[in-house]
Length: 296
Image (tube, rainbow, N blue to C red; front, side, top):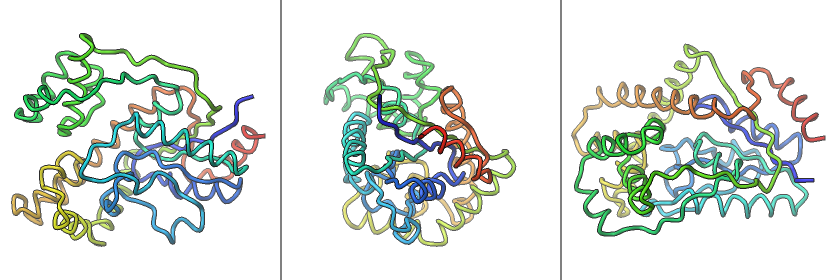
């Protein structure tokens, strides 16, 4: 029988990390991060990483593993995540995958076989001259389904999506392999009105703690402004603010809008997976009962 792994997914600000720690405490687990920004070193407040105090002694893996100067691929993530799962199982502990990056979660849990297309330097040089809007329009023309789930302002991902299609001569349908483990999937969800309030409160807290200071420090350490545009919408808007291209009054509404749009994309992505059992976060006894039965 395949060994079991718990997966906790959901939109931003639904409390995935806090639940994962409670599950780890109860079932003797270790946490493996599935977040495309928390993998980067130094991007702490900017990605909403769990702090050492918040971890409550529970080991966390695949956080702070990548240089923010270079792109980290989903193929690299999947390979490392599978290795970490094996290591945790070898210690007779329960692996708990937690995160909101749907592509990472699908690649790991659904046995997705990813097209291994090497970088095309000439094509990238040509594509990087185009604006994000132009790249998105091109991707939408050749792959509407991928365009519907991608961050339309993330030039790195847009270039990579177009690069894969160009190399293979068609837009690949990602094939499903055979997952190595039995994944027990839980999803957390809030009503829209309540989730908006939670996103707003969490964003204010991250800004107050020093998201802008963190980004300025990374820039002083050598990360160029252009790279922040590729790392995510939070980093893109804060970088614009630090360069004087956005005012302090403008920054919060723009970040709030982008976080809410991202939350809607996350929900649309995860809702496609019929293996996910959905709960409202206050339903902790039901969640624990469900896991106890699923893992026994």
